[in-house]
Image (tube, rainbow, N blue to C red; front, side, top):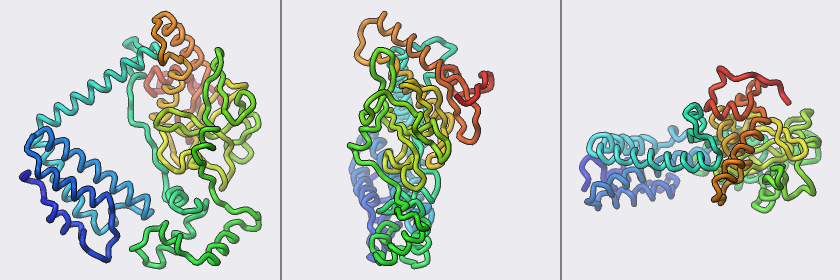
Length: 384
């Protein structure tokens, strides 16, 4: 029994686990099992790992709650019990498991340094003045507002799902999630709602969420010796000449980048195709708009209302492009690797980026990456 940590029975009472009138959460069941397992362990390193695992499960529950309910997890009747458990874990890690915490942080730093070494080998960025460019900040961005979360939760992904949210809130039906509530609504009432939303357009305002095959067709990949970009769905090189990133703003397309640094792009269509369409509302590593001419990227912005990206996400897309343009994965010849890296830096230097989605100030993408996102001394450029 680990002293200072509540037992499974105490936790179940704190979160009303056996209350038949409250929703069952698989993530809370997982916490109960993890607590049981932690109290059985004797080895300190294993106990520390188990405490970190419970902390992760707490974070998972909070995310799951907000996605399913469409409101803050702090409004849950179980929040206090889960907060109490987290407080106990934090105190244990900071006091009883101080040495294990220090060792854990040291391992994280070693892992990060190894990643830095790989990045340095692939891209050629390695001088002391370019240290900031080698940072690996967490850049994942979730949907930025309740409206977009509701669009994600609505089974039909309506662009105006707030109308249904209001009906859900007025019903006081808190035992069912928003998604369950919509699935059980009267179909005739939903048709009336859709007709009102459409306002005579004869088309449903349902946002398209791509399946795996559709998403793969929109991936932007470098091809050929000139590192020009194309998509599988296009007969030739990708060009944003015929695309829109907003109604009336032609020559730009919208894009997102997933956790594996894959970039997807297409035109935006209001209430039909948004940034959330690519990954089905899941977190992105970067998002915004692109200007591409004959396969060559000329400009990037962080303009995305769904994800509201910033400097970290701008750095992420610059870093990913540098790696893609270098093409050094699997290259063992040092001279060839160095030549590829130099070429990639020259190509990134030909791209301008706007890291703030609220303004139109652009900077050289390579300089922006080299300075780690600090734009104080960088030259400003106009939109390409």
